[in-house]
Amino acid sequence: MEGSNQASTPPDSFMSVDAVRMAIDTPWKAINEIERMLLWPIARIQCSLAGIGWGAGWKFYGLPIIQKHRRSTMTIGAGMELRSTARSNPLGANRPCILSTRRVDAVLQIGSGFGMTGGSVVCEEQITIGDRVIVGANSVITDTDFHPLGAERRRTHILDGATAPVVIGDDVFIGMNVLILKGVTIGAGSVIGAGSVVTRDVPAGVIAAGNPAKIIKTI
Image 1 (cartoon, rainbow, N blue to C red):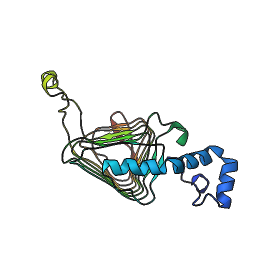
Image 2: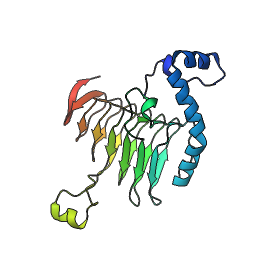
Image 3: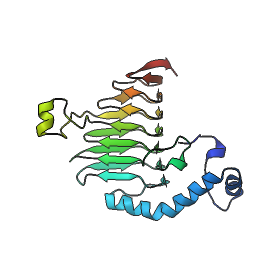
């Protein structure tokens, strides 16, 4: 996500004075907005084919990858913003955003105001993300190991990795290149430092960072 200050927020109308000023001062943002509008019909069709109703205020900068198992549940609140191209964020997304439910009865629930740049949310059991959660560039949230740890089990059931639900509270900020693993709960308002690997619960209202992530200080 780009900065939250007034100058970085796209104008509500392309015909406004603010839109003209943005186009002059930051032409790359104007190009991003034009491309977003041109892709809007395709994005709507993509979500419809995946069985996801289009939400109020959604913005897609580039097309994400949506992989929804037909017998899973994927619900997303209003105001989602996904940035899937390198030019849509100065941090440079290295791939499109991916939202994936991979098994029967998997439940991915995302609240309102969700933002992500070039990251992945991969759900095989249950992932619950609260409101106003921002995920930095190229981060991954997953509730599965994907593959079993034992070699014998991998030979016979290569995709039968262990799973455990993930819960991310309201107003959590996740830095770029973060990996959040299965069974983790992150409390409301916490910040996860860039490059962290989160393997255990993080309480509300703290900054956690490192590999494995540890509490650095209280906010």
